[in-house]
Image (cartoon, rainbow, N blue to C red; front, side, top):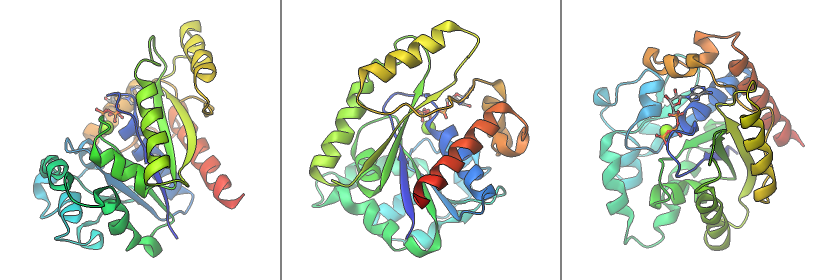
Amino acid sequence: MARRIAVASQKGGVGKTTTVASIGVALAELGQRVLLVDLDPQACLTFSMGIDPEDLPASVHEVISGVRSASDVIVSTVEGVDLLPSTIALAQSESTLVGKSNAVFTLQRALVMIDDDYDIVLLDCPPTLGILTVNALTAAHEVLVPLQCETLAHRGVGQVVETVAEVKRVSNPDLIVLGFLPTMFDGRTTHAQVVLADIGTRYDMPVLTPPIPRSVRFAEAPALGRTVLSTSPQLRGAEVYRAHARQLVARSID
Ligand SMILES: Nc1ncnc2c1ncn2[C@@H]1O[C@H](COP(=O)(O)OP(=O)(O)OP(=O)(O)O)[C@@H](O)[C@H]1O
Ligand SMILES: [Mg+2]
């Protein structure tokens, strides 16, 4: 059965999409069958994996709307992972879902159908705590919260922590919180280290190590439709994402 992991935070630009793409490709390097799900109407993950949403006949929006099955819409990518892509049409899903009974289980129902096709499914959430993110957290077995190592990184983090707690109470009691994943870490500054130590004490949630180093290579790769795993395979950031992929696989064997 596929293990579904949501990468969520309503804070924008903290590295959710980069984490889904990079850990996904690192997991594929380890021989895992990986599906990435783009749940952001901006479709950044879809573009980042080298796919133009304009060229696609359908997206995760049609899956959520119930007019297509996930397996009809999934595409393969050059880096060895499959993708359930997004398009701007997904913006309508919020209103499609609101008011439907059991709306929070919509994505879970669609993904259960492809359970046998993948070892790991990574869900890239939009920077909101709306019905799409709640669907992802309900469909997920585990959740990871990326956190940028900068001043006031903790501001607003309480909201995503509270949403996760609410989902556990209401729709997904078995959801496992893997923890915070520190991103864009500049180890040369004591400041980044202070932020990291501070987060560890504020919330009752593990902080995963090692932190993802900051590198301009991460910002360059999406324009090439690739991840740093293939554009800069020796980059320390690529190695660190590989380390997290190995930790995830080790966790599943435990
Ligand atoms: N480790 C890193 N070092 C430097 N830049 C990074 C790193 N990780 C991500 N970035 C860049 O930071 C920007 C935001 O990253 P990303 O899109 O992954 O965040 P996000 O949380 O998905 O954003 P959004 O909330 O808008 O969906 C992107 O331009 C990305 O290339
Ligand atoms: Mg994103």
